[in-house]
Length: 227
Image (cartoon, rainbow, N blue to C red):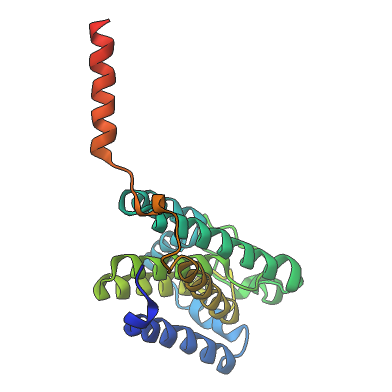
């Protein structure tokens, strides 16, 4: 598997975005971030952000897993490991370490918030943003899997937009988004590094073959036809 040391541009680009989000969260007052981003709304942005925020759903790991099974089993194992670690850490932060931290709706008057149709705005378990964590985790995973700068930067851009959408939809504060980005990158880094060595079972170097599956299916069909 590709070492992070061979992809310093990955570290620099993701680190730049994560650090920028963290610094911004320290500079901008909590609540002002939501009022400003959420306040600049229109129907097009409502549709765009209510759609793109779904890229932060944990289900995003399923298509990645299916693709990895066709490439190499070790990548599929890494995807499962990263998804589980990401979900575990987010739950620990939300439910155990910071269960009392509320979302924007708990602190801001509803009259000040623009609610997007079809979006259920929550009030509890704000820190960190789970959608942002998932988006950054999946984006970094795609970046490492493809080893392509263009795809990597596009993936990072989508992850950033997911984080932005969480504030636009009044679901999280900037601090939640910044923390989510950190958690997401950390889980992918750890999951990737755990399998980034040679002491792995030989079967992890294998992959699913569609042609082999189709050939077996055709043989089974031919056999039934002769019976």
